[in-house]
Image (cartoon, rainbow, N blue to C red; front, side, top):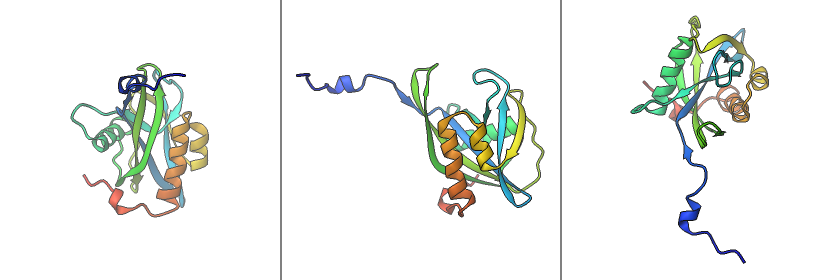
Length: 164
């Protein structure tokens, strides 16, 4: 019979960290909610479609990183901004960690022009089903469905609104 694991044994394994953010930008076009997806133009993950993503810098809050990444990657500033109340999780093979990634939702009520960073080659405003089809990562697919249900089909709760 195998002995029970000691507390030290239970601390072994893959570390868990939360260094990244994701942002789902939404704009209503011709009465329909559309998600912004952007195509990566650099490794890793060159040529995949994704939402705005990025790394949290030292001293930054996750929501601050999200707003910074929106500006850096698209040139946009959302008119309304929320915690998505959703955490994406994935195994980061390169860094040997399980990453937890807080997601955010930004609503674009204005007609600002998208100015992509050099990290991306294309952008599209697409319906939720097309966004789910285009993104690669399972958790991003789940996040889009979650955002559609709770932020588009329903009114987002004000207590999740980020004021800045």
